[in-house]
Length: 201
Image (tube, rainbow, N blue to C red; front, side, top):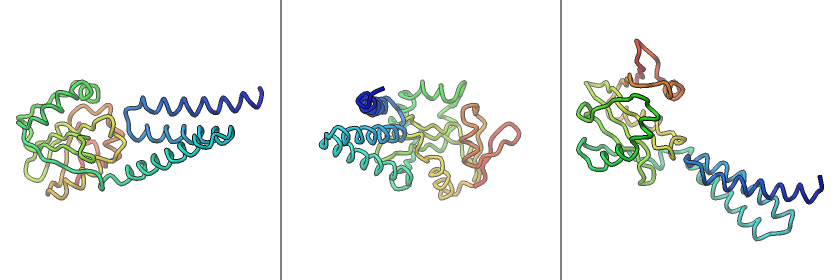
């Protein structure tokens, strides 16, 4: 294995990772893989003395790190919007993401008429999550707690818990399909009680 072969392999690896990153649905994962690929390609560019390419990749790394740092502080980017059940945006989002919702929550069944608390979470103006809930007193039963694929690595759940507290909600319950979400529910502090998940706020 020659030195030239190893150098070329480094260049191809960096290019491959940058290209693969653009196939990822998660914004955070895209940034992480793109950063790794850009660092490798920057090293390759320095080795072959292609300094304009190295400088470009250096700034790509800085841009990615900036956005990754912002994703660690989602409260600065998130907004919670309360909607009514006949809202056209809500109906559009539920129809548009219906296939993914069914994939995330196999056999889920919810009725908008049962929901009296409907929220859309936005990140910098773009829809990132949908919550349907039934509020009774200070307890809310979650009928749907869905995050759009690109934003699942943003801490939307923690953000929602704080917003629910601010709205006077003291207890959350969830009794829908949970096989794909046990780790998520556990991370948010839900405990299983009599076949449903409960979180005291």
